[in-house]
Amino acid sequence: MYVSYMFLSRTEQQGMVLVDVLLAMTLAAFFVSIFSIVFSMEEKSFVRAQGRIVSLTASSTSVSIDLDTVTIPSLFPIHIPVSSMPVCSSNFEDFIRPGSSIHTSTTTSRLATPTIKDIILPIPPTLPLTHLEVRGSLALISADSPVYADPDIFVFDISPSTSSSTATSTYNAHLVSYLNTGPGIASFVLAGRRIFAAASSIAGQVHTIGFTGTSSPDYPFLENKYKLSPPYATATLPYATAIAFSSTESPNDYLLSTGDISPQIRSFLYLGTEKWDGSEFSIVDVTDPHLPVLSTGLEVGARVADIATYSGKVYIANAGVGQLIVSKVNPVIAENGLVIDDSLLLSGWSRQTGKVISVSDYGLVFGRTSGGYDITTDHELFSIATTSIVDSQSLSNASGLFTRNIPGGVYGVVQDKDHVYIITNQVGAEFQIFDHSLSTSSVFLLPTQPQSITCDGHKIYILSRTSPHIYEITF
Image 1 (spheres, rainbow, N blue to C red):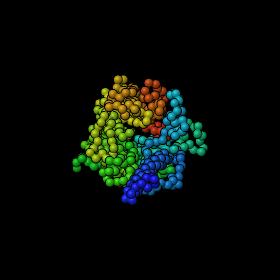
Image 2: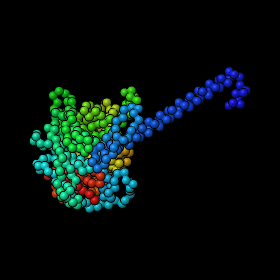
Image 3: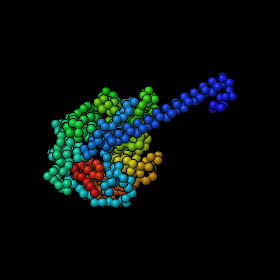
Image 4: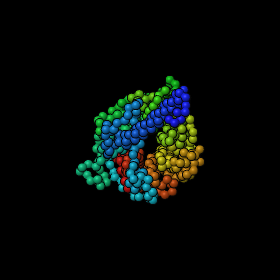
């Protein structure tokens, strides 16, 4: 460049210098932009990673991580997402833990014999228990008693006492605390250190419950209630029947519409109710849990029994014609209401009810009741591969749709990468295990009618409907 300058006039040399300066400024701006993008990506990745840590540990007593020692560049406000999903094994029967080096193990599928422990709850047997969540050694249970003064949230320590051997097949739980919110609770989700409950009340369908203390959840207290708005003044409000929770990052189109420059984590409740004149399915923004705000709704036309979300879709089990309804949903920008994108149309819908849903990376499992008596052609258990859900235009015609007749109906389900685990009212076969094609099974007796099923780590837990007991299942 210097040699070329020698043969240029002064004016031409000044022009070339100006070009060089402009080129240097352009390159500088380019590199600044690249560094900004990389920094933003790294920050988002760090936030997601920290959010995952919070999700795994915020409601667990078995893991302790000091997040105060971790710092994040504070260019803009950051909200940490919290999951309501339990952290469970990818294979209960091979004790594969999430995050372990053998998480994606291809161990041959097998049906092992479970070990069942009976955990006795020190509460009156007349209390109708409704839902169970377990985190570490703590079990949280809801109840829906007709007696107004009865508690409706219980916290139990279900670890064996020091005087009992861990090999003991029956032992007593310890009641840590309880709360009476007024009406009963049909179901709840545990999001970090907060409970969002679907209440059997027309005065407030959502009850937000916090916990005192700074370590494990101990004493619950009622933070606030949220009441649905009637479609007209004289409409009778419904009881809440089902609830789900998710955190989601604000999409770019929402950010542009609000003028915000940074994505934020927002939290939403998915609320189901009895049939009424309003929407049986509602999405409530609880980014500020002390100030819930209705986002949108969907009129299902029937009682909602269970709700699950996966990959931008919401799945609604209900008592209507389409007993499994699917709607594409982005609650952040869904201002014009939701529409039903797909539904699973099944014979026997007039007497059978869509009851439970489990959706994960392993697949979709849907269960319904038997309607009081068994018609062998009207199946109660359905399994679809997740890839089929994503690719298929119709659930009813999805490739890899498997069905199974369950005479006692399906009242709860969990799944891992190899198996589907269900609870049923079928006498002598209250706990059943299938592969995802529902072709092979093992059945096991429980001394009770089961009410709710969940998992934590490598353990499965079943709540009794007819007595104050939890059954812990390991393999």
